Length: 138
Image (cartoon, rainbow, N blue to C red):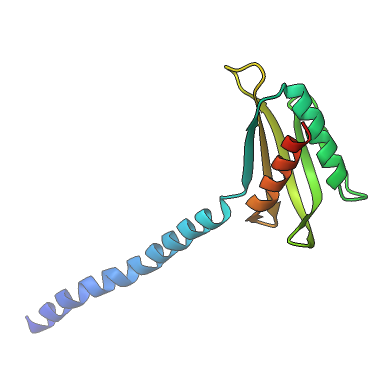
């Protein structure tokens, strides 16, 4: 009977040992999502979509890396490619997606949405800088 009581005391400890790796993995996953999710800069501007699209193309061409081609899709007003920006006095490359999204309720309002990544890391400061540069060109 004493041996059985010892096993009963040991059972909760064994259960926690089995659950510990799953709890640790969930915590690491939640941290990773939070760390790398913030990669978008978005600005709403009061301008026609066509004007914003032309400004976005001009900014993308200014920051394009020589020898790297940009994927410019006029139909959905989206630009994708590697761009080079100067941030904190350092030249940095990033994979960038620029989207021009019209508001459905308002005729002359458009959203500039820029996503920037360096590897798997989101770079919200690069995205925001490019979105602001597009808005300043209007």
